Length: 140
Image (cartoon, rainbow, N blue to C red):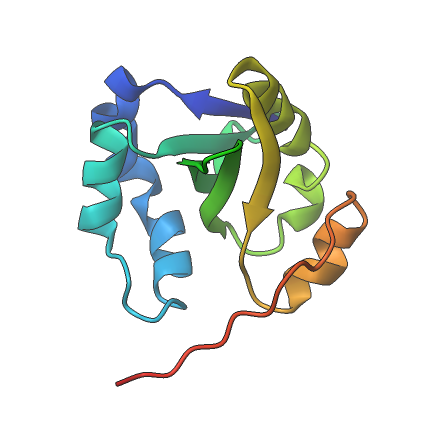
């Protein structure tokens, strides 16, 4: 599995082929974003698009977006949306971390953060991630 960042100039060509993967993640959110919103953020380089290519199958199995968050004392990289083809987690789980960490080092980013369903803690805990906060919401 090769995991790589899609350069901004290639978003327009790639997006139609992977938007269904991101839509899976969007379908589980609380309405804070849409595929159209995500596309605009990627085009404007406000978020980054990452893909996981299964070399053997010659198929994109993973798509996820990130966003650099600048705090007063440091920068964090937030993993925003993650979508994958069914039953492919084992194909990409150990491949996506290094490119992401390299990107962080190149951009003086001190921490990777992500929010997700409880099951992600079990999966990402094996890669050194830990639970930091619990997010509570109330719909109005």
